[in-house]
Image (cartoon, rainbow, N blue to C red; front, top):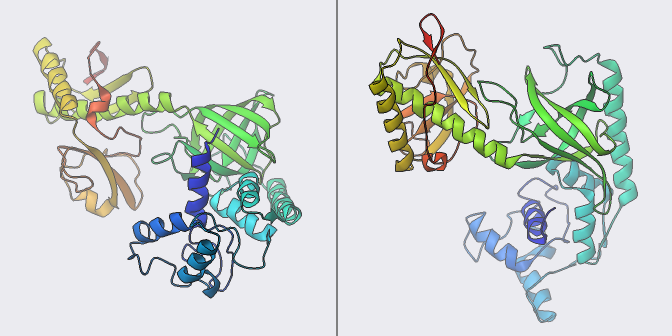
Length: 402
């Protein structure tokens, strides 16, 4: 459930300056969202402008600072300015654009509009929504999509899980599962990490919202997998109905589970580095499992001596106590190949841009003591790991230890 502050913050972020943020055309006038105290602060901090110039370059004349100030002062306050023109209804087209492009639900648009004495053209919004659903259903009929196939004819899923644990998303496809109560759901964007690179997929909840803060369905995301560039959310229906293609939903990850996974993933990087320092530079990673309950790390080496195990464990814990920063940045793969200090795994397929996770050094400066090509999720500082212990070390194949 969102708090009032969360709703207000998101609404103001989207609408504080729709002209410069390309929400509306330069000659459009939508003067229904302004809070002068927020505008005054955001104009300086967000846009980096001076107090005198803290307004949009294409701000309509009716909304310039003197006009807003004059109107606010005439009411004896510099608070919410509900209207500065004759418009009293937010068009369905604009409400749909907020929803479709920025993930802002209609019910929250209606709520914020009511607080400013305005209405929303819900009928116009619903007409546009139905047109979108019809397009999605038509596309579904044309495509024989199999979850088991590697060639899903759907646009790549945008992964937002590095920065967000919850997002508003649009259903791209709802695919059948072997179990009647389960669905394989494809979204346009998601905070859920799909299993890859040894890291398990995220779990969470998917909500199907109705109008006026109601909810018409809820599903439990059991697993997240990847087929090509498309993320498949395996979800079990727990309440109401499943979503339909073209419908907006809210999806959130199991944040506690993700944090446990992140701790284990970052410590695999520390372990890899420590093996190079205390055992051999040839102790190369051969595989891993990164889950919420444990990690396993496979590497090429002779059996470790008890002293080597103690030394590796001690070094990893020392780095945890240091609370070194963990950061990541994207660079061209051609540049990464030239860097012998960046660990990469031969045989893996990389795109033109690769993500480098570094521990220590200056954030994103590629000067850390541990640097690896990695698409997984990680803690922000090693201190979040708390402690590390080697439970068991054994052979799993000729020349490979776990």
